[in-house]
Amino acid sequence: MSYLESDLSTSRPTHTVENYLMTMQVMERDQGEIVAARLAEELNVTPATVAMTLKRMERDNWIDGKGRHKGIHLTETGRKAAYSVVRRHMLTEWLLLKILKLPMLEIHAEAHNIEHAISPQLEERLVDILNNPQVCPHGNPFPGCEEATLAWTPLTEIESGARVVVHRVHELAENNQELLGYLIQNGILPGAQAEVSEVLPFNQTLTIKVDGKTCTLGFSAARYIFVEKLP
Ligand SMILES: [Zn+2]
Ligand SMILES: [Zn+2]
Image (cartoon, rainbow, N blue to C red; front, side, top):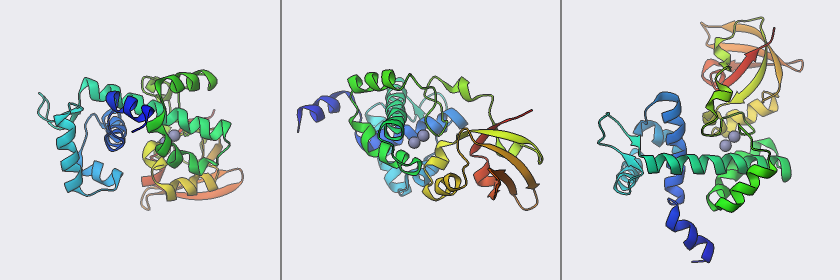
């Protein structure tokens, strides 16, 4: 084991646990609870694997399964570790995009490989160099910066005819390479201006125009896109 590995392993969870913690942080933030079945879906593993990992995570005090409240919850240590890996993930995305000029489609997946190895010193340096960002390149908030995103509305809540500016593509969409590719291809990214041209609730679809290009989205994808209405 190299010096770096041994140094990190004393203070940090394993890569697997870090990946669980990241997904848990998003679930807890958005739904107020962590659901094992959804972890299996998001992490692309079997329910049996999730059950085993959760047992280990409880033993190691990252989560609490028998707290006062029902369900799985992050312990204080677990939440700290989750915030740390989410921060490193988001800083790495910026590093890959801004400094290394990787394509938008690749930064999330590549950051997943690198985030575990970012030392606290490197993290601090990245914060400095990147000007202390509040959101990741997809517009998702750094832990503690959630307020920056509160004013943004899911695209599914916008009526037809409205003009909007896109601010955020949710973490769950970042994780879906096919959907993310479709959004990028159609220019549906933070900063883009769009017009909602048609909403068809019976069909569960809406159509938006970005840069003259028309594109149809199902509500299940559109709810991952957060926008602000333009006057
Ligand atoms: Zn990401
Ligand atoms: Zn991101």
